[in-house]
Length: 142
Image 1 (tube, rainbow, N blue to C red):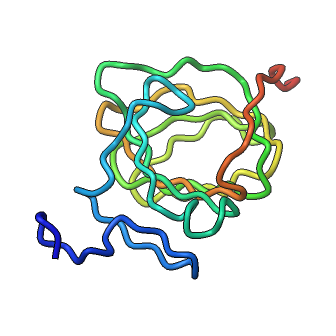
Image 2 (image 1 turned 180 degrees about the horizontal axis):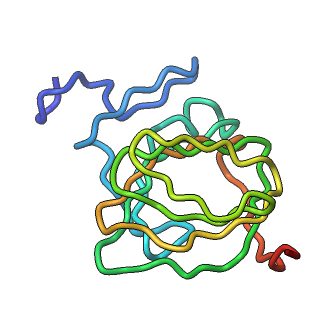
């Protein structure tokens, strides 16, 4: 057992793909794609050799989104809202408000932008691959 009462394996990613992380082992970090969010890695990237990524993304209170159209170079991207709300605009689908329990599969290359979020907003994001590029995009024609 470690000092925090967890088994020694906590926070590890094993070569066989096994991963176990606890909240107190993997704190939120301000480094990430957007300055108005904090990110918590769930250990899946290490366990899968970068094939899959999973993270919790949480709003940084008092900071708001910068609604810029963009695309991600991903094969798969899913978000599941656990707390608060997010407002997005998606190419071909318009504006949507996501709330706890909302789940979105964002197809590869879909143009989108985040329009706003609540101070307590939080979501889980799963991507293939774990590391991917994000590019600015032109606004879709209406």
